[in-house]
Amino acid sequence: MKQDIDWSKLGFKYHTTDIRYISNYKNGSWDEGQLSTNSNVTINESAGVLQYAQTCFEGLKAYTTKDNKIVCFRPDLNAARMEESCKRLEMPVFNKERFVNAVKEVVKANASWVPPYGYGASLYIRPYMFASGAVIGVKPADEYQFRIFTTPVGPYFQGGAKPIVIRISDFDRAAPNGTGHIKAGLNYAMSLHAIVDAHNQGFAENMYLDSKTRTKVEETGGANFIFVTQDNKVITPKSSSILPSITRRSLLYVAEHYLNLKVEEREIYKEELKDFKECALCGTAAVLSPVGKINDHGKEISFPSGMENMGEITKKLYDTLVGIQLGEIEAPKGWIEVIL
Image 1 (spheres, rainbow, N blue to C red):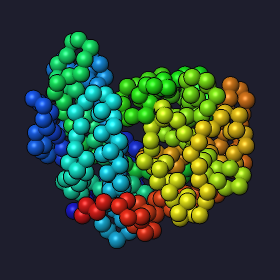
Image 2 (cartoon, rainbow, N blue to C red):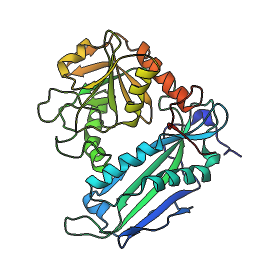
Image 3 (spheres, rainbow, N blue to C red):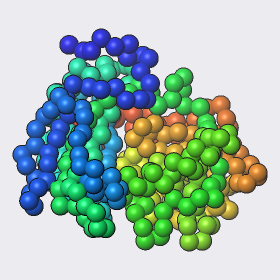
């Protein structure tokens, strides 16, 4: 039995669901983990997460497919990416198989919160880990907690994905040899002032350039870029300091193998922006968010795709990937994890 919710009016915000997963790391190993009804976290005042921001997270979704199955999209890649985040932050790795099994357990336990097919809604899944052990010297903690909670969310865009206007930011998102390539909480904390400032100036997002030369496109505070050339090649920025987006990786595969388009991952220079015909942000929440204009310190770069609708190629990418996630289009082997 599904929850008594108006699924058509869900926003993209947090709703407390019934069950979450919790596992604790102590004395050099993880415990067996358990499901819990308690949504609160109690930690020491000197916990490493509070003092030195030792935390990382992931984000993925569960869907109800066209044939009424509950599935997750490529959770193995979230497990692998979280492993890399943990290694970089000197946190204990949570086994990939256990990660995927924990995701499946939590989704099963919250099956009544998975929105039905046809509403454009999904169950957002947030695995995260933080240092729970007390520290005062600058060093890794010796105790950690891994948790997963879920929340039903509606479409990221109410009323359709209208193109947005973004700006080229004067702030730096990540250092060349820093933590931009992992999903560390501290990366997102650093972006908060920049996004608030962008919103205050009338822009939806920031485009960050590489901090070393400030000539190459990197990403936004929480999404990767995808560009389409005049001859319909799909291109994404290549950099060691941007997050390896699972959505971006999947979209490139879709472009090449489903839409028969050429794809390329390479360095993209700011001077090239005026030559592209489409631009979009990609990520778990929205899949693809079209960009209509980029403001470069007062100079506008307008894409031929315009400010009314998604560009032609962007729309095909979006429709195909969402179709795969919802069981409307046959998925590549290993992409869909059936839960119920």
